Picture 1 (cartoon, rainbow, N blue to C red):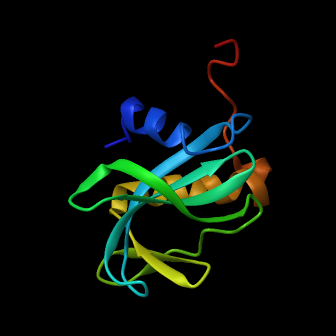
Picture 2 (spheres, rainbow, N blue to C red):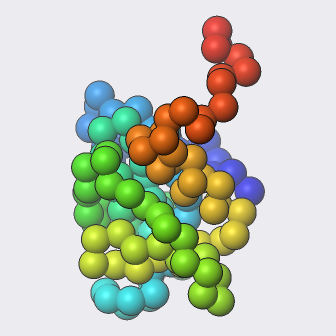
Length: 122
């Protein structure tokens, strides 16, 4: 299920005013600093790890870490669930977001693989 526009709007308030959100997906840290819910927000400028409220993964509260946009999210490791490493952390996410991770990486590292925008005038 895509991240709702309300969650996107909440995340937007934590980013710089000139950043445009490209992708967002929920993730669970499975290593240090312990198990916690996060949102991975990929903008045109950064990859941000956004902390959420305890027991409310749809309520972002602060930017936990920021990486350059050229940071590769993959490869996706298939443990019991799909996982990625980002900085010193490991994140687990629902299988439905694997395409989001792949698209975020392709946008920077293999733009020729990105499909054409079917509605470029919107």
